Length: 297
Ligand SMILES: Nc1ncnc2c1ncn2[C@@H]1O[C@H](COP(=O)(O)OP(=O)(O)OP(=O)(O)O)[C@@H](O)[C@H]1O
Image 1 (tube, rainbow, N blue to C red):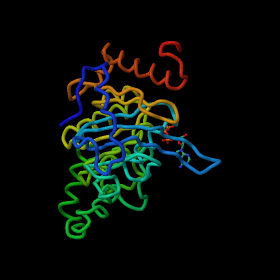
Image 2 (tube, helix red, strand yellow):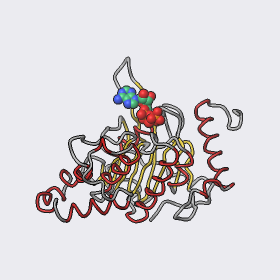
Image 3 (cartoon, helix red, strand yellow):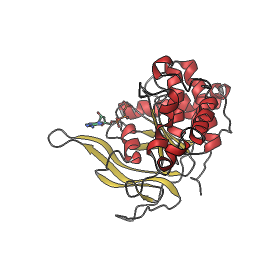
């Protein structure tokens, strides 16, 4: 079952009150679930309360964007879901299990597409197949045939056909970010965690990559959690947009965006879309300043 779809501008129904500590996810239909999760970094006297009690449910195959003021805990949520960070309290479930109980295939892409400089783009993109089960058991046998074909097909899909033999320093920032998306997807991850992956790119390259990202999502349908500061990007790519308050962050607004796919750049200039991003902007300003929306020009 997917998350409740409500017309844009309305809040989805609030989740039912929690039933206390749980060993199993409370909502079995959720692929990702944060249940009353908090994160505090450091020790007294240098503690940073990064995440206030936060609950979030994401259906399988959904595309959710997290937006909010700088430092509000967006990346912290990605780290929790990716199993890189443990919650200080509460629970994190992925695919029906507590996050580190059983590994799920995760793809990740960040603002800086770190590539190993001594490897070709093809070998960089192929890296997850070398280390992630069940692919790693077949790596030696398939790396020059099936896995190579898989990488070449992905490179072609993002416009990098013929660049597999190049090294990272021979590619532009936009090309490296395309390769980074290929690396995040090459092992068919069930979950894709994207932390401002297009943030360092110029406007034109960024918009081109939105289109590529949308196409990759439509054809592969991983569950995606995207952190971004770009509200047009959130609206273009995501089905659902969660707005966080200032630190310690929590989700203060959670809305479904129902525009049909494939979405176009032209759509992002339509009045409904502009009104939606304007409303998100107001919510973030409100979250930052604690003033009512609209009081800041
Ligand atoms: N390892 C850490 N130790 C101490 N404090 C940390 C650590 N990681 C993050 N923080 C703090 O926790 C808060 C939330 O950080 P996080 O990176 O999740 O925010 P964010 O919303 O992703 O920020 P931005 O939008 O600026 O990237 C910030 O105040 C940050 O300084």
